[in-house]
Length: 203
Image (cartoon, rainbow, N blue to C red; front, side, top):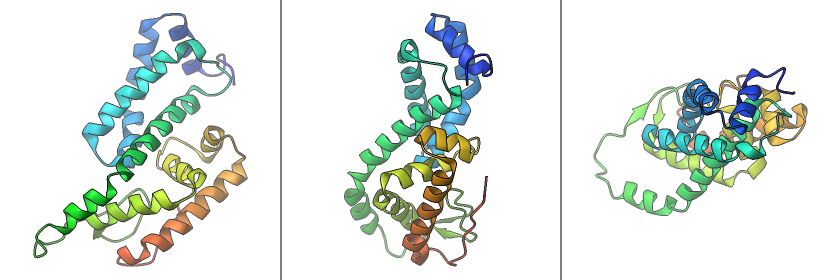
């Protein structure tokens, strides 16, 4: 898709030519969607906002290499995906310390719960702290292509077609990656849910 079919690509080409107002327009349009996808990955709003700033810094620094050969959003969310994966890898290195800290808390303290863990759509309330820990472990154990597909699937604005473009694979392969990733996560996280039922919402 060229710039003529994608007005955002045209804006990015203007950024490439040094138009700061075009960059500001793109930031205003996509700042919140980028924050949303990061937040659904790391569940920390302050860090999500900081990482979103890093995304747009990288967009600006990469402007001279930008080519309008695909949708701008595909390129943008590829950058976002890579920064999210880097953050997950960084956090995974500290998993042992986090687990040790959680085990040292008062055992008589009521477990915190929350509803609608949108990431994987479990139908009932779940134990927040333990599930968060196990989600990170389960994601880390997935093959990287499945993990990336699952992370991108958290972003509502990305269709399976968009995810396939980001991953550089076919639509059918993308659907298969997401299905296999969900099934693997289902099995890994099943003991930590109050019911084994899951929702496989199609986009």
